[in-house]
Length: 381
Image (tube, rainbow, N blue to C red; front, side, top):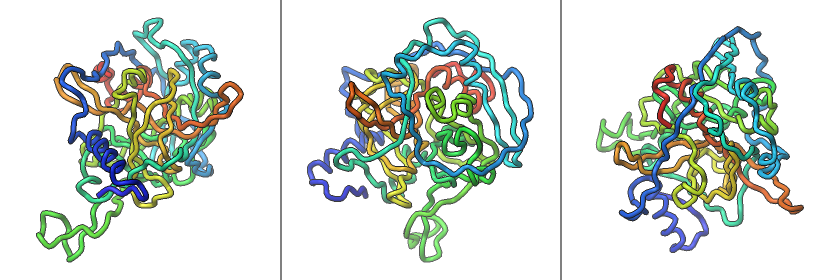
């Protein structure tokens, strides 16, 4: 069952219908119009050289929210980075479970001029806007089914999303504060919600008497993490905010259905102009919380919205469901990573947004290569 305390029944019914649409059980689209995944001509991001770094300290406090003073208009007016700067930002640091780390410099190929069209950058933390429109997801029929089952919890307190058999996408600030790694990152774990069974049952299929009592987390250790240098060099501000993403590789496969990543379409091409994501908000401990909302503004690297959220939701995968023309089917893809909250000066009047990092063609090429290890498998965004 879904819980939304204090909401009138009719509004609850409408929101529940939208939730079912997001879960793929109801299609809100007519036969005459289908929001379709755009085709992108993608660049290639390949490692050029890798060298060892000194073992890091793990003394940073985990920050479950980040902020920046440069809003949409500020970033839209910022000159686009040069080719050499982009290569520097997309170079990345890898941390291994034994505490060793490396830096990898990259090359970028087949990037046409104009492919990185422009508008700027920004990002921040999160809060509640007016009535709280978040849903707490209860019951294994929801929690253990796609797409909610792709949401996982990091031992540092954030949320992540399953994007491959052994990979989790999250926010960079969940494991690195821009200067060093946060406490607990060397022994980082990823938690998967599993049902507890009473009457001695170990699974729903073992006994008809096995009844789920409550949910618990089963933890898998992380083998290595990748963080772009744009985040580390940016030190969590201005340009760095545009690179607030990280990829975690697990020590063993998780055996769950995952959600593919995709290049973020322009906001006007999103179904209803709306995004969706689920996370483990700190004010609802032990609950997976789902929400959706309209995109209010965008830059080349960021989506600005007012989805209700609290610390702990950082790192959640922002997704949409669109028509895949080649396969003639509906498909959800992760198009961004929820980062945080931002105060913006709009014509002298302060306004606040929650912000997600967009998966641009370059970021898609980088993250896909981290997952696949072969750029030939990363030609379709």
